[in-house]
Image (cartoon, rainbow, N blue to C red; front, side, top):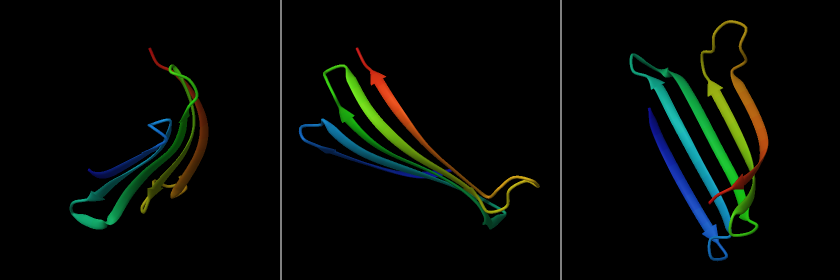
Length: 82
């Protein structure tokens, strides 16, 4: 499994964009590939609370029978840190 991750913070770290992509090629057949991407936008509302939205995509070039090759998901997140 290989991955690439990038993170950008703006406004003294109050606003964050983060993207991570995982690649899982099959060693004996590189055309059989799985890709997972997660992209997040987050805003630090207060010292302890942040609000974010995440986009996730999973792609499998050769999925099992009856399973779609691409799965997309968008989710909201409220985080508390201490």
